[in-house]
Length: 143
Image (cartoon, rainbow, N blue to C red; front, side, top):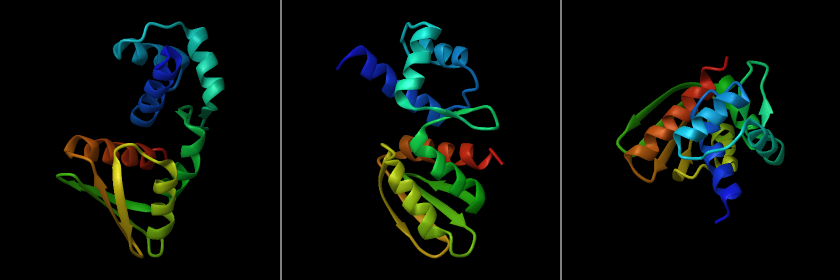
């Protein structure tokens, strides 16, 4: 794979996992992942990937904006048990939040089942389930 492609995949993972506020923050996260790059390179990657900055001042992937809104408005709680993540939503919110999660095509998610106010997410393993839980909690905390 090309270095740019690998770096942009790392950026996608970092932005979903962390609250990145500046390009310098992103450069520092990339360096921790073993990518040596400049702020100018990161700036080009941000433009290429279509990253957006929310009013709260954090970067988010364009495809995650809808997911972030759904989670922040409808998710009541999130819990994990081994490789399963259970998401509770307000009444009638389960299907919509599950559709937004599916549209985000999260790498760690094997599949999900949604009811009226509950979603069961099956992750690849326990670490993946923790990443899914952390990502959902990150979007919930942007209220």
